[in-house]
Image (tube, rainbow, N blue to C red; front, side):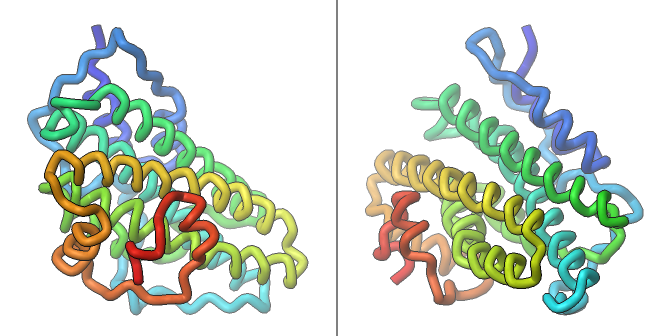
Length: 261
């Protein structure tokens, strides 16, 4: 009988982005899987050695007016989606065998975050295939590790991770993606716009899943979700939440304005 947690750990340990996405998409979960915690969980997922990781302010500015600028933007999106794969599988590996998840909902938790991880893998594949079609590979440009810094800051508590990963980082994606889609269409890049629309629609579901699990954990902790979210953000996130917010998409995901007002 296979240990599903070990299988998810293998996704985190795979350095090749394309193989990581392929491995993520190959996983299945059913009641025959064991959920046995692993002895060691890496702080950071494996990455190719040639990837140049720089400070956030050192990443090249992306201008919309040229193909080169749009490719740089798509490369940045690919980097976000790659990190999102690992965030989903790290969620399973790190927290599914811990309280309060293990005592109440660990199998449902695994199924939900596997689905999210596989959708993120699909998103990475769509963007990286488009880059390849246009003469670029993921890793050709420098990236920054700010997204994974947030994961490290929340590695000890599932409520902190749920607050920051889906309810701050992914929710921010709901705010910024529609303007990106609009600009791609204005530039005549309909292919990229269509891919971003697919990602946007599925990310609403990811934020909704984050709300679901954050509220469940809050019920066990006996804390009010919106106030606890604000507390977690003040304690574990390095920057304030800034408008404008996509109120329609956030509401569709179950994230009411009290979370960020």
